[in-house]
Image 1 (tube, one colour):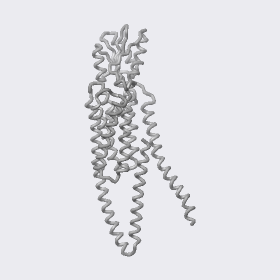
Image 2: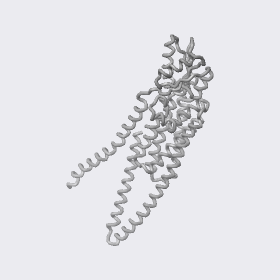
Image 3: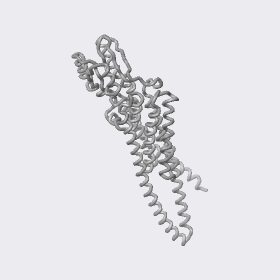
Image 4: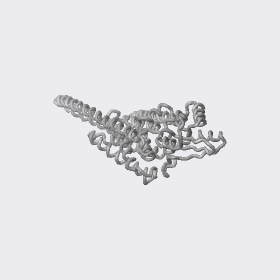
Length: 381
């Protein structure tokens, strides 16, 4: 009768150790999110931001050189001969602002490239025009859709599609852990189709983030989502309950911060700016911008980035298949040896079978607990 009271403190201590052990994940998430988001967004400053001065005479050359020298590396200033050339550079994202000096100075921007970048350029040339005693007229050569006045709706669409994708990985890897890998991979592809359709619904009929090109947007959303899901399902074989944290590092901490959806790389620290050239979130954001607002300019490169991440996902599925096949063979061999030992022990008494049954029960309970813990960690999304 004394076992009950003495067991309670032990059970409480074990439960506390269990809970405290699980604090590692949210603390790592806190540290990672703080480093990533604050590191990328807390102090945006331009560096090598490409802008143009329109004109071919000495005054235009002097103004461009003066701006270049005074910017201390913040701007990369060039001259273009006329307004048409300036507009063309804005629409191919070769420049993010073009200043036309004169009695009625005008600044050309393309807010669809990035509203925050356009705002920075406007501040720079408002001061230039004020120094000449003239008000500045601002003309947007590539405005965003009416449903996305800040131009950041595509970024928040990226967030929604990303969360739907890597949260689905936790469900497939946890609740579907007993399924064959090929079935889990098929579920990943199916989930990516559903997530991408939801994304298109948000972008079009629900919020009107874009007013055309929904077919192309869906294709990029599916390719992006499928890449995340396949990578996640493949990694789950190796990372198990740490998969959610790994995916948050890949597709939140490094992904959202380097996508260019809030600040383009010209306004970010070098590390995040360098990720922008090949990370899948940047491929999606810039691909949608190119498709919807810039006539498909450089779209192929952005789609290639998404396709390469998809291929990485397929490769990880292949590696996971090999790893799981080896584990199955090892388990079969272990079971055969255990069965032989249990059989010989059974000849001397019933202790061997009972012991084997108890071990099997404990193993099953451990697997169930691991699955439950992994699903709980999805809250970290």
